[in-house]
Length: 243
Ligand code: BTN
Image 1 (cartoon, rainbow, N blue to C red):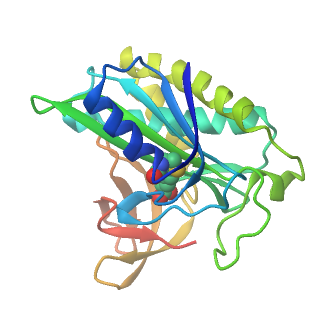
Image 2 (cartoon, rainbow, N blue to C red):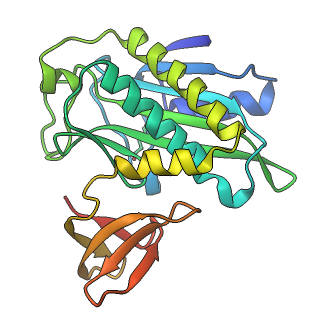
């Protein structure tokens, strides 16, 4: 692993994408920052964490074996990698909230933002951005967020945890390359937050609906069984699972 440690940067994803466009990068080049001034989250949100307390890093990975409609398998691989690393650290009651939030006791401890790089219309590489709340003790105004330290009382070493996550990404990368898609999908579905439980969703038009999460499609859409027994597929722009 080629680790670039930065004190402050706007966003490790943005920085790494800029680097990719200028120089040839080794696989598993990792950029980590103590502080991000413009950390980015899913769907244009901001990722805000206390400076120095948490892991905010991005991993460069060449990957050209996935068709454009198979990209979600990388997201699954990364979610499973983080799940394994946190299991190794004895973090309790872990689950994956679709598409790729990692929860412990229903609180979000980790978010993932994967930005794919395309060449001639095909996925060629990815910048895998990970924000893992490690040692932050205060999450004022963020009712669903927590950190590993808040949950276990243990203080975590950033680079040790990062190394464990990268090791597990390497492990699941081999599943992606070997096209073990069914294994990836079932591993992910087994860990899905609120699977088969009655859940409330907010639709993009603001309306609330009730349904049961049944799993994901081959493209990573969420399969929800609605009240009228109809199984529908949704993408991230269409609905949000409320806690
Ligand atoms: C989310 O849950 O919305 C995804 C959050 C991803 C945050 C990480 S922190 C490191 C990397 N750099 C960014 O700007 N975002 C990702």
